[in-house]
Length: 430
Image (cartoon, rainbow, N blue to C red; front, top):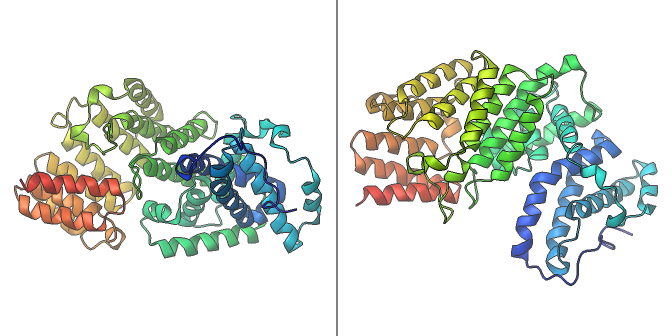
């Protein structure tokens, strides 16, 4: 009997529509997919990573198909676990690669008899972190480590991974394929590496959590501007590492950065779901408790020794300023200059230009933007054109600013980003 022949029971008396079910399935895709993949890999081995991913995807598709008709089950996570496990067993049986998996089909598959301990909070972080360390294996290059981690553990699509890495989607697809094949060829087990193997991988994990939080904080595509659940998960995992002996000052600084940004999430959209710019936000609604936690973690991290220290310092300056005009933009511009010593990122140069413009130096800002105008990594994104529009406004050239905003809106991938740009155009056109 296959997965499609017998699905764990739902609630036939409940009436649900696809619109009702879609957010629930997306929630479990974001939060349970990594855990399901890690559980399946623990049982069947890392060699079955790709098959495990396919099985989890199949389970989510089954949820979209059956839950609208039958209603979500009492234990949605358990339902997905059961269906994914059965699907993987079917695949492996057909491949005839693990004969000892077949008897598992005859176990009691009732969701009601599942041991719910597998999804207890105490175990979830371990599985996710184990998978993170596996995906960040030193035999893989950094971008492949990040691509695998974001795709497998964070539930990101290829477009979101590409946006985070500033790469083309086709390049990311090939990178993921090669990465999976490399992990399989290494016959890696899903075990936490030895203590002396952790430090070389921790930097990549920091980077992955950083990109995960960023995608939640400002979605690179789609209609929803902020996924606070993704931000919360990235912060939780970072906090877990920060409280572990393997933590470094960079871990503490990264956590400080996340907390300072998380403090402002509630004020970044209005009641209609529209994105609010920094100058439009109600600062009285910012979570002062989170800001103070961020300040303490940054203090604990010591002298700046990573880019996360400097970014957290920038975020804290924003949180402590009484208004946009009161913000110490000159110090922020200088911090971005220091960040370029850690990474010559076009995004750092772009943000430094914006800070210079706000600090009253729009001419310097325009010259800096000109130096990155031909950067291939930004060519497909709206950020550069949008920044140019902001700087042109500061230079007193509203018509040219409108043209830059129109250029940005034409290539913006997210509806919320396009809406902000259209507001700028409307404001300057009157």
